[in-house]
Length: 383
Image (cartoon, rainbow, N blue to C red; front, side, top):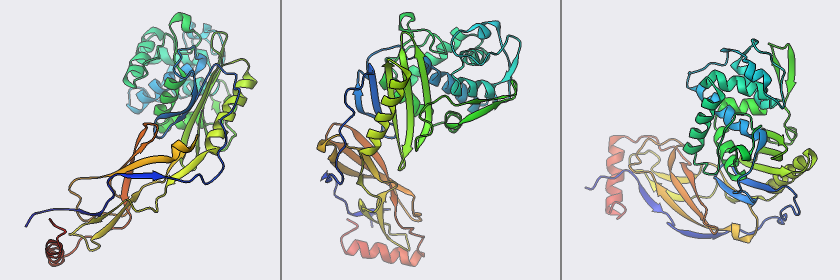
């Protein structure tokens, strides 16, 4: 008798699908004046809407997203601690631009420097943090560039940790790269906590600082980063989670702070206004037989619904293919991953979604297992 663990009873291997447009589509924002902008799917990793998203530009203090990510990863690795005390250097004190006015010789914790860099965009705090991590800002920039290379940010290069320097100094990135970077950064719980904090109490200065992100009060906004320099113009990146979906919007090169904020908000609202569910968690994608289970027939469904931002009707066209994990065998618990649903969209984007068991199988007695296998063999299902 041939041994097997799970058998697909009903699977449509490749299914061409079209979902009707349930609600009227909202057209993309028109006449945005920012030089570059993008809306990015933070869950599935593709551009939804963009202008000049691959154009290399100065990005101002959005640079600090990478600064924060480097430091947070070191905290998570145990190489530095949030309560480590950092002595501020004269170089950090003298850094121009936005500051929290720390003084050479003053001692702040790593946690204070992280929050000051994120919430107040404090250049002096960012430099102090970089020097603590790497000994100098120049050495820290090497870490930033190594991380950019690791993440595949091919149009990004850093020479400082603050973004005060511009493209003319070889400090640049793109809207696309920064969306990808923020999505990666938000995988870290500590960084999500920092960026979403409305305020933070600086014990070293006995005062409370506020989060300068202008869209933090919008539903679902979990933070991001502001920026403004003469070469970069006004810049803003925002991550927002609604209905379990993370979308990221960025604008670069806006003429004023007000335009930057308004256009970033327009992009966020447009994206979520066009979010549509294409595949629900109720739709059975495959039926499995698990001979060793008390419940030996199993439905494979999505672990979470598949929704996309619909730009036009082409976004409603897709194919699906079921890929099951090898050697599935009882006991399998409800919610346990049993495979993946590969969704291929008409625009060439491919998304892989977890398939999970709708039911628990339990583990049958040895006599029941033999009976199940014999029944499958003689009904032809075991061939």
